[in-house]
Length: 117
Image 1 (cartoon, rainbow, N blue to C red):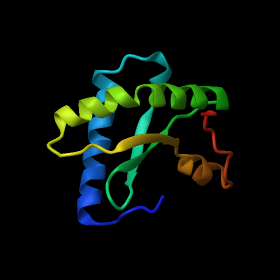
Image 2: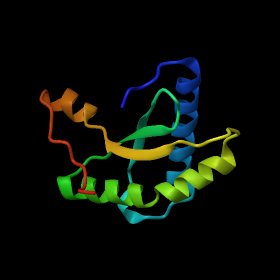
Image 3: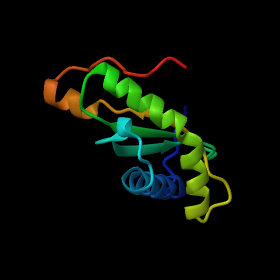
Image 4: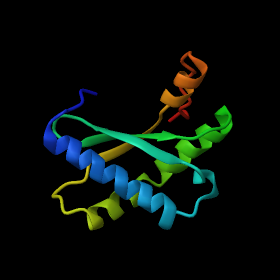
């Protein structure tokens, strides 16, 4: 996905990141999503698709179950975003585990931990 670095996409990404983080704390009560934090949002050029980066410590199974829970809740998250944000269209959400912190701590890239779709 080609990402955009325009002011509008950066502002919208920040807004989406804050709202999803708030939803994880206040609205979503899935035990698989405990201690999940949103580390960033990347939007494509036409702002129709968003990659939401999340961090979570733990083993591969825990990260995979959290990614699956986030993908299952994507419809709810998107509809709640449309109610909270004052935008015409909310992008499609894809959740990706961000292993940046593990790379910084351990000094080597770890495997991508995404569930099979």
